[in-house]
Length: 224
Ligand code: B12
Image (spheres, rainbow, N blue to C red):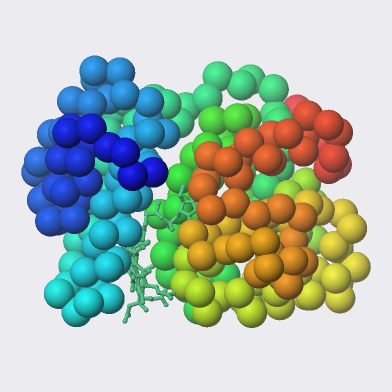
């Protein structure tokens, strides 16, 4: 996504500059004027990528990453955004256990994915961040989900995601769940290496895959 109009570019710049006030004003205006919330999230994501680049080039520090995260969280809490996440599905679609794998505390993408699943009517058991593989296994045993979703924003989490899949194989649970992994850095090659059933670099694409899995009758279904 590179072809932004003036307003889009302004929003991205406000995020990049960590301008909390103007980001919130413009994001709210855009939503009120009818911007697709998913598109707004894409713009926010682009701003966050630029913040990441400034951190890489040592123009920004860890405190700036924290600030960027706080700004993004506030955008997620805007009225129109929360309304968008409140789905209208009254029938349960399926059950998902989700978490950010051990070694990683990034959770904004995971939370967006969770909200999207909830909007599709999924029951979501969110294990939080820095989740050890044994906790994934325990919760799959306990909740019998249809899907396990792993987030790992740091490139170093590839190994840990693979270990979670291995732990599910060892516990004889692998065949009972679909596994989706998500992060910007994932590729076909890392996806195959990890041994998941699908991957997505975008939360909304990932949520669509999960919904499709349930539509075609994968998983164990959820009562009620
Ligand atoms: C904000 C931020 C932080 C915040 C996070 C706040 C929070 N609550 O999450 C804080 C300050 C905690 C942080 C810490 C660190 N960070 Co940081 N952080 C960022 C930043 C700027 C934005 C991340 C973000 O929230 N983006 C917006 C969300 C929406 O994007 P996302 O999480 O990636 O999610 C998208 C996809 O990945 C996907 N997705 C994510 N999860 C899932 C799950 C599923 C199932 C699916 C389907 C999809 C999916 O969907 C989303 C898009 O729709 C990025 C820069 C960047 N390029 O992303 C760096 C970045 C990720 N951080 C980085 C680093 C290095 C760190 C630290 C190691 C810094 C340090 N020296 O301590 C620590 C790591 C601590 C740890 N152990 O985890 C590097 C990682 C580099 C690498 N090669 O791995 C980045 C890329 C910055 C950079 N360019 O250097 N960070």
